[in-house]
Image (cartoon, rainbow, N blue to C red; front, side):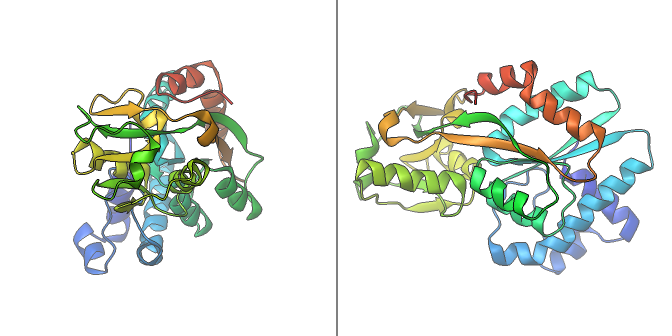
Length: 285
């Protein structure tokens, strides 16, 4: 399966701009996994390079018989959409799915800045609404649900038992940043549980947070249930539904998108997509 690095290679060939030159202009980015770990200031610098790179990928695809679908998807969908993309490609020979993965908020900024997305799958209906408001996206369809859970390193060395432990100042605790769906949801959990959290780090996307917990850099973090459902490198502690609101995942295509983009959305909401989402810990809408 292709990724954004393919776009950069093509972009470099067409414009003779190397990664080293892009770095000199303050625009270095990890194209293997667009995790969305970019703040607003960095995105302002990177937007032209990423938009041009993605456009170049589309141009390269047009020079061959292969068709591409550019899918912008929330970081929490990384594992599920990797499997869904592979299954879709297997059923549609000659079509390649290009995944751009990151926080829903950073993906929104990319789209609104002109990045050529064919499909957008968000972890927030509010973020999706702001994209729809821009006027060039189809009516979204809800394809999955999720809730938060406490993730701890294997063995739970800090003996975390529940949300109340997030008030313990001696622990190293993490959530997602404000404005990122998993971060906003975490703060809602703290509010409902009447917990004043002693947070040490606010990560820019949930994958970054999970990585730090896996590495035993944090005693605990609030992540999505799907992030820990099949992850052997962390342990999961569930939260009561009364303090753990459900979040929904909408998906849409954009004006001018290909038949393949519509087919990908149908695949996601179809039986194979639903099965793969369920295997990765997502609920049905």
